Length: 409
Image (cartoon, rainbow, N blue to C red):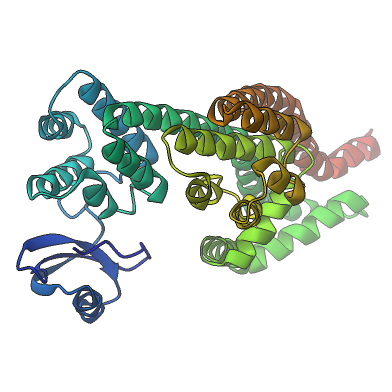
């Protein structure tokens, strides 16, 4: 049976085919061309009978992009249905028909169709790696194997809700100052390009030496007026190239994640959020019965930070050779003493998942408090920055008028 290829920024192809045993199967792959799809499926022993290209994954028939919030809500709804004893296929039907996003409806109905063909829930989810990552599929697989799928889905929904809450807190902490800086730049550009030249025409008939701050602002305005297209183009192009490199290059991601962890104000918040995600993920997988070494495969990526991904890979390598988790974590020098002590207690008492869950609760609360404090701190700082920037420009342009009033008086 085919598995979906790793998601990359290519076209999405919907395919149908026949496997080696003659069983009809279908799925989706992301690739650069139909030839690549045919080649990948041929290697898996599948003869393609139908192949159709979509402009974007699951959005061809309209609907918004599927977000983490959509997947999190679906997980909670499915867990609730399963706990209530509703059959799985009926649960998918109810959740799909009641969802407000048509794209999510189609995704859930595709998964339901796969299950009706005899595929396991894990196999059906694994066909859509854009929305259900390895961690999600591993946990569902563990639940199916142990016969506790409803319990695993409940834990998975709690996990995703807490992770989503932490992500939203970090985004809210970063969004406010970034949006203010963008607005400040736009206002400054408008003043430089349109307002200052009007004052320059007025001052040309002044007949006296202008103050130094006014001359500096006028020189900057001349540069803006002459090269505005180059300034905006270079800033936009640089940001676009940087964001693409950040998304695609592991080396750039590592550099940026190291920088973000060392930022004076935001760094500690980002580090706490990363540790919260790391411990929450490991606690959820370990409590589901996933072996520690196997669980660590998914933990690093779920942390959302390349520095901790690299640390997790080192931890996994050491744990697989018999080193205790606490010692391996200590060797990375990436975890606070409190985390190490709680992990050690969990290992000694046989309650590692419980202790890691308490650590995650603690750091999630820390992130919540830190974001609230940041919001209170950033407001006066931003007011001062905007006051100095915009107020400085206004004062520089009004200094000659004040000087003119003194001369006339």
